[in-house]
Length: 162
Image 1 (tube, one colour):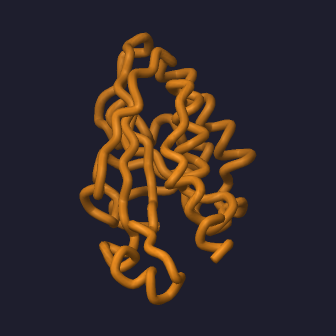
Image 2 (image 1 turned 90 degrees about the vertical axis):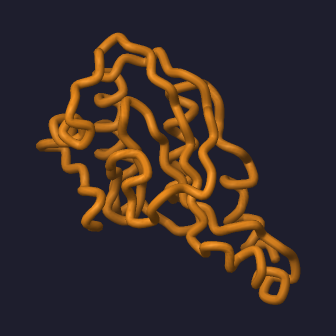
C-alpha cells in the first residue's frame, strides 16, 4: 500500500472514499469523468521497445478514473482511491475527457463495493489479463457508456504477440 493511496476495505469503503475528497458529493449531481493515463516506463518504452520487441510501443500504461473528485484505480491490493494525480506515479502523462456521468454518487459507491467483493478483489489482479486498465474500462463503461482507448486495453496482447 502506498503512502498516497489507501486500500479500500468493505467495512469502511464508502466512508473512506468520502474522506479522500473531504466532501460528500451531491447525491444527484452530474460529475465529469476523466481517464488519467500514466506511463510506467517514464518514456523508456518508446526508446527501448524497438530493440526489445522489434517494434515501438509508446508507453506501458497505467490508468485511473477520476470522478466525484477522486481517482479510482485497481492493483494487487484491490480497488484504491486518492485525490486526482495523488498516486505514487505523480502527475499523469495524459488526461482524457470521457464525458459526464449522471450516475448518482451513492449508486457509484454501491457498484464499487460490489466490484471490490467480486471481480476486482486484489487476488484477481493479473498483469496482462485483469489489471488497472481492465478496471478503468469497466468503470468508464458503467459511468459514461464509453470505453477507454483500445491502444491502452490492447497493449498486453500486442506485447505478448511479439
